[in-house]
Each structure stands twice: as structure tokens, then as C-alpha cells.
Image 1: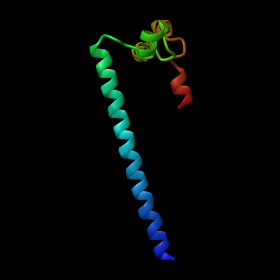
Image 2 (image 1 turned 45 degrees about the horizontal axis):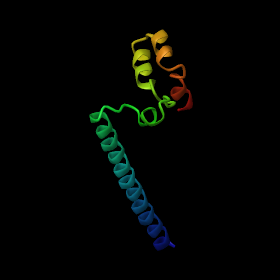
Image 3 (image 1 turned 30 degrees about the vertical axis):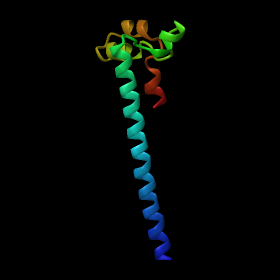
Image 4 (image 1 turned 180 degrees about the horizontal axis):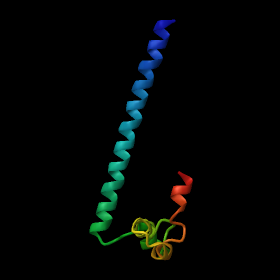
Length: 88
């Protein structure tokens, strides 16, 4: 019985470290992709391709303005800027 428990714990540790390596690789790929886009002068790939701003366009500027307590300007940049706080 104890051997079975040890096997599950070891298997779980391996699975957890495998997931973390995958997430780190995924995040690095995304960061490199956006750095390349930034160097090419492309801010939002969706807006670049379609000409229509995506749902996240303006969110960073809106959150920055909200941190400075300028809610009027934050709402101007993105009307749903408080949504991430509500969802989390």
C-alpha cells in the first residue's frame, strides 16, 4: 500500500514539473513573438490583420490610468477595464 502511494506522489511531481516546463516554454514563445511584432511596429496582430481592435486593445493603458485614479481616461481607453478584477 505504501509503495502505491509513493508511486502516485512521484508521478504527480513529474507531471507538475512537466506542466511548468511547458508553460514556461509557451510563455517564452509568446514573449519572443510579441517582441518581434513590436520591432516591426505592429502593436496588436489582430488589429494589424483585420483593422478592427481586439477585445484587449487599450486595456493596458486603461489599467495604467485607473492606477493613477484617472477613471474618465481609463474608461475612454477601454470601457471594460474593471472586468479583469471582477473575473479574478
